[in-house]
Length: 478
Image (cartoon, rainbow, N blue to C red; front, side, top):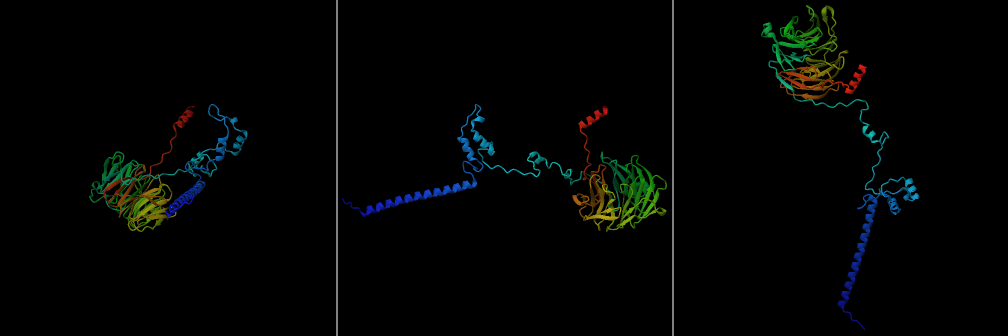
């Protein structure tokens, strides 16, 4: 039997076969793609050691997992595997491999063991190795220095004269301030104010005014230098003048006590040495300056007197008498380029003196008074009017004139500026330190007094504990 196949049937048959071939090719391509993806997935798993269900295959022990799964175990009533339930060979193998307590599942790598310099893995050693400084010294923390004064007082008629010394703070917490011809005493404890004297009314001269004030070490007596060439000594508690000493031929612009001895500097360029215990008080005359002596300061041990004057010189004197009662300076230092009024001895280093120059100099210098040489200096950028040291820390404060009329806190011996205090509108002519050594009072030509908490307090010694005190008391009773 012959079958006649038409052209249309043949075309349909070919199309059907091509369609089957295409489906077969697509399945093969899909199988190849899946195989490639499987290889890629396997490669990624091999590289990263993780997949969706098991994040970290490298940290897992599959051999041990399979061994535990295939081993027969006998559980006791508490659910723990009895020691004799395992095959002795497998137990020995596990113990010899050191994996008796290894984890079966792990999702992250264990951190590498730290290697401490001390060789100890004890965390206590790690966290306590820096508890103390190797040198045994504790690190000091920086203290806060307020930029605003604690108190402001009005000081009308405070003379704007660079060469005068019109303010002093006593050991009994009384601040003496000369305003024109009157000396006022301000009690820092209770804030009371009283008038001590009026030299214009007492001397009967309206043109007289006060040029300098200085306290004795005990704070009971105040010396006053006047424009009428006189030196007065007052008992502040009795408010009574004890002595009036003449001898100078110009105004007395500087004073400094050394026990019962009083040094006075004048516009006549001389320094007189007074012994206030005897009637003939003037025992020595120190000659070495050529212009007004505007600064005087005794060393802490009382062995050396430093003086500064309008002739730009700093002189050092010995209290021993020379011939005919005239004393020549031990050293003359002429490095300053302007008048020297600011003088202050360092209380922390022997034979160290700080001096400050005027407008044309602007420099603070530190001297070795044993050799008469300059150890160091710093340009402050403005007129230096006064200098005071902290009695507790190696710091000093300087007061300045134009252009900022500021106070500067310096650290010694690095001479770094720790703080700058502003607020005065005219040059800051005078500085005084409180008896506790923490507060500095500044007097300026703007006729105000400002009190700054600038110096660190005295460190208190550690008190004994109550137990130690009790034990010492018991031992003393026994």
